[in-house]
Amino acid sequence: MKDFWLSSGHHLLDRDERGRLRATDEFMKVYLARPELAPPPEACTVERTLHLTLLSDPWRPVAASEIDAIAEADARENWQFMIEFRDRVAAQRTLEATYAASVRNGVRVPPIFLDQMVHLILRNALDQCDDAYMLRAAEMFFRPQRVTLHDGSLLAADQERIDANPSPVSPLASMFGLPAEPEIEMLSDVNALDYWKRSDRFDLALDLTTGRRGLAALGSVIVCWVKHLLDIDIMVEPLKELRDATLPWYVGLDAEGTRIGDALWNGAAIDEATRARVVGLFRLTFRDPGIVIERMAGEALYLILAMTPDGMLRLKPQNLLTGLPVRRLEPAT
Image (cartoon, rainbow, N blue to C red; front, top):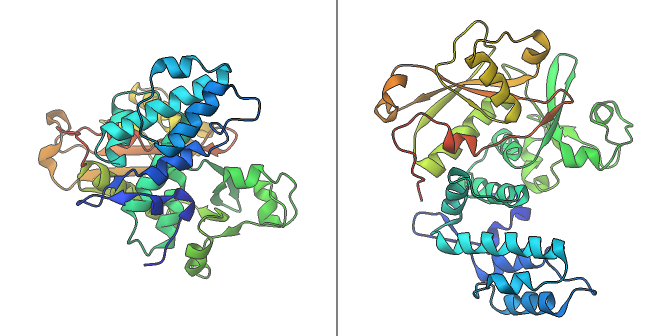
């Protein structure tokens, strides 16, 4: 299979006997090289010493008093997050287990750490994937998107890619606020084979219009994510819309989707403007109905994905680990 998402750093990780990700010295040293942790010239001796010794042994015990002795407040906070994260990785068998335990136990984790773990876990779960639409849809799990409606089509493009270049030139770039160089391109059957060589550029837009390939691909990624992390087999079907229907159970795939689901659950009316912000609606069913909690036996489960009023879309894949109505939710790690 062709490689992709080299920026995830997956080459720096080992795999256990079940194919789950194990952290290595090299992997942890990449975090130590981040600008938030690399000491600037004016850093105090304590911080410089801490950084230097961890470069030699990234797993050595670090006492809270060492971090408390760092002079600069922001540096202390960064190091506290880093050491807490490192110690959780060391305590768990795999990176998948670290992620699952963090989100299910409500552990305070900086969003950048969560996104990096999702990036790596999906790179592992999709290692044999040969569908460019699925890989592009999977980017939505760890990279925020900007969504726009154009000629009846709902298009998503990478937020960071767009926001870094605010001066539009070409028609497609203009919709997202991107100049001609470098320009985004719509993923299609014509350029799908190019995905692997440009996967780390995140410069392909995805058509999320109902009934087209993008939403179906996102549903397939959800199936893969749940199977990889929970070892639960599910089926996910994109729907056209939800009108005048009760929600026996729902999972918001982002904060806006959760808010809309909460309103429907409580019997509130949803106006057309809010309804128009629903990017994707899915029906989820379990291949083994016996794992579902009793009151959900035979009932449909809905997944709701929605953008903000200003067109931002940020998935929360952790909701799929914490929100399913099943009898067991132990991670498959």
